[in-house]
Length: 370
Image (cartoon, rainbow, N blue to C red):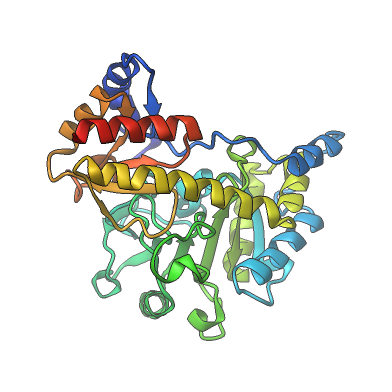
């Protein structure tokens, strides 16, 4: 298919529910989109300002400063030592990479792109734009012959699923049997809440315990949008197999996909400062601790959601009915049908809402449960 054949943007279907929620006397509590509401840390804003004399073209490969910062960050925060500049690449946010990766890898009609069953829709879109066939499947034993690219998402959007070391290792083994590139979208990895992830890091697909000593055909994709409140900067990066990174870099040069130079400097500063990340994590934890029990009191069951930025909730009714019930409380969610055909009875609620709106939503949910 061509890009002109894409369906209408799905979020347009939410507009009537947004209008309905906005009629609440105390205003809307918008939990639908994961767009940060908290300030960009001063240390990062200052870095951006300091780099605004950017009279020359930036490089697609990234400055030595940002590439070194990415390598150091993986070693320090993700348990991935030994990366070199040839293993990493900055991107213009992570959505453009997700959408373009099948095309940049040269996939075409007849090739298969596997993605999660509960999935960020751009995995599907990117496959279709390249002419490939998207196949939703979580179990590596179900990944079919002909697969050229496999997306996993850990922690998952929308369901908060985390792939542990054993699961990642099994995914790597199967991807290598298929000769496929395995791309792990890990952009919520700093946000672990329940089970082992409350006290230990979410593992990366590049973790030596997973790779068996080889990064061949493996990619880790990461974004600073959430942990550093940089959604407006479009600041992201990938790391992994040097051969695949070189292929991507060559094709990105041809397309002029170059992160702005001031943003690259700001990224390097953000990656070197762990304090603001820890602070933002606690902000999200507090909002989660307000919203999760209130949803449960109102009759919702929270599935998964052991990590990440969302609560994946169901009251065992059609998602659009739940959307309507929440809208009548002045709360806007995202319908599960936007994340695949397998979850018509779930809604997704984001933690990217102000503390005041989180408390207001919780109060309304508890009042509705009485």
